[in-house]
Length: 312
Length: 144
Ligand SMILES: Nc1ncnc2c1ncn2[C@@H]1O[C@H](COP(=O)(O)OP(=O)(O)OP(=O)(O)O)[C@@H](O)[C@H]1O
Ligand SMILES: [Mg+2]
Image (tube, rainbow over all chains, first blue to last red):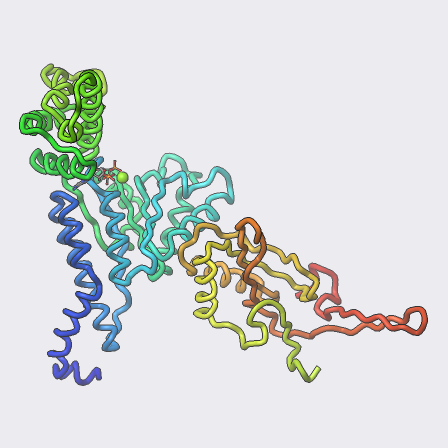
């Protein structure tokens, strides 16, 4: 069999198989969903496609007895708040499951507190517990750099890192580890933990969203919740977003979600104030211009100086 | 004892079969996890059939999705205690059950000496019987 492939005689079969394998994995459907539900993120989506292709080809190669060892898929997601790191990690678990790379496809999301203990001998069992729960799926470690506290020599975080390193090497077939955090802090973390850097195959940087992307995200979010913007409200949102982006504590898609939540609140208030009239379904689903313009962001954005209240 | 050559202790599931492979153990654990039973690893050096409560190796494992984590502990326990009996137990906490639903041996000492039969003369020429594992001849802590 191997001979036949080496001579290239199996080439026609191979192309047929890839198509079949592709269809069997249903990966197209997941990719389409990813494209539809997540706005922008071009580089991320491209990388996910590449990983999917790699895994499919790998599966075919295994059918022909060509071994190359399962590829390492530990990843590092960097980006500013609200750029979709957690959301993509969840999708990644599903995609890797469909491609047969992980057996169950669940995601266990943790931070330092879930991994690191309070006293001697507490950390190792705690970290192992988490690893065991994540086996068969994805272990997502948010703000991973807090595991490493260089200012404290006795910090138990180091112990946790060492156990993680060991399992990332020895249990590659059992789980995928995804680290996430802000870019510069993550870079510093890897500088002091070269072992961790060398075990991570994919570094994905999540870009900030532009105004038009944020607007599309807003539309998707509203659609999911059965709301829609009136024409004037859509215009107001277009003005709102650039102002919000300049204010402190801006966190990309999350700020959009929070802004919309408050717009819904104002909409409900407005409807409640006019409760003597009969409401239609259209009334209930429409966000009007005033619901957007009522935001403090407009007032605060106009003051050129730094507003001292948190625009949350 | 020709009915049980090698004096293999038979208790729990599968104990009349050849030892389970890691793959077979994983398949059994997978079944337990599918039923939401809490799986734990236990060990003892006293194979007496009435020795119900074995020592627990680590904590019972809840919320696991995949058998790999448990197999990891099985192998840790085997490596740490190669001369002990090790078993995997799956506990069902559903009201009304609240009992182990599965239990099977995954490690045995290399040499299983079996049981001594004790005969006791009783009143009226009656005879009492009991068994004692040779494995417990020496005091606890001095058995290898
Ligand atoms: N590209 C996108 N399209 C649609 N919705 C998005 C997109 N990116 C993020 N969101 C939404 O924004 C919210 C925040 O995203 P998420 O929690 O994934 O960000 P994060 O990068 O993990 O942030 P943090 O660093 O603060 O943890 C979620 O509700 C998510 O659904
Ligand atoms: Mg997050």
